[in-house]
Amino acid sequence: MLRTIEEKKPLIHHLTNTVTINDCANMTLALGGSPVMADDLLEVEEMVALADAVVLNTGTLNPAMREAQLLAGKTANRLGKPIILDPVGAGATTLRTDFMKELMQQIQFTVIKGNASEIKTLLGQATTTKGVDVAEGESLDFHAVRAFAAESNQVIVVTGPVDFVTDGQHELHLDVGTKRLGQVTGTGCMTASLIATLLGAGYARFEAAALGTFLMGKAGEQADEKKGIGDFRTGLFNAVSLMTEETLREVHFNEA
Image (cartoon, rainbow, N blue to C red; front, side, top):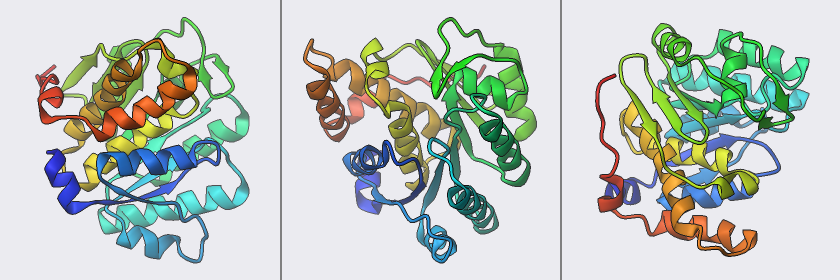
């Protein structure tokens, strides 16, 4: 699997937020992919055509980015390119919630990855948020998530203390990771990059979603050696770049 990624070196086109853009680029490189972050409307369609997968991240929205993301998503759908949505901050403001509705109405996503607050917003459920972070104690109706995944024909990843991945027919609960992942900005954004890299390398959508989510959690465990936050962040990149096939085999795919 990892050899396939290195050989193909999939090009992953990110239209992502300005807070974590560099980390997303480096995490893509760490797994063996090739990142590009082109959001100018004059080249978005051409870049999507060149890419093997597309990431839309709504962390830092502005009118130009919203227009570029809609164009990129529609182009990816037309060309049959896998596309992942990271609905950062969904539910925090009217602007974000309305834009999520617009994205969902106009674009068919391959994978949607978010925390419980963000996914509940996409399901139209009441939620509480802390800006772009999940509210403490946020509960989730897993039956509703399964139904949403099946009806929309999209893989849904809900990140949290135990990550949940489902396409409506298959599901996984991934009890992997460390609380320190929540102390570093952008680990969710980087997870989307890992999933996109696996999609771009040709892996099936459920497998890519589960393995990409697992990779971030496992990297967090391997990096968590009671070091400072700066060393922990660096350790994440080291762990992903040194990840082995044997470690990935810890993920067992079973039907729901």
